[in-house]
Length: 161
Image (cartoon, rainbow, N blue to C red):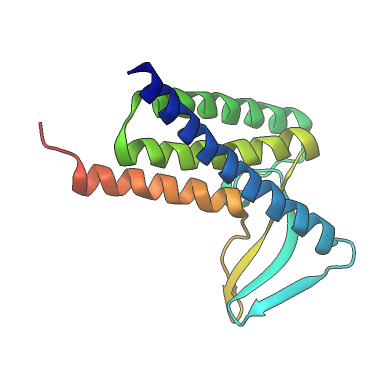
């Protein structure tokens, strides 16, 4: 039985590492190729472009702060939430566990940036003509997918007790 638990832990850890690495590699590419000083934008399609910005807030640039104390406080709150997500990941099974894995893996990517760069590089810009959605990154995609799965599970798949 312990061998099965160990294999499951290794598999789950592997998924988290893959999410983290996908985020890191995409951000490395964006930082290297989308120089913010030159205002370079790569237009992939009429609806998608890559444009580097540095986000000091939370998801999608919300609650951005210039003041260092506010930024540090927000970073501590995000670290605490990430620890809670990790705890929940350990206590769940099935689709809920994989939703928490996606949120946790994405959160680790953004936390790394907050600690290393003091900001999170966002570069994926979805738009239609002059309407632009918030610019985001690969970690944000995994966090959003994980939260979406948790919401779907809660509304449609949770057994009624």
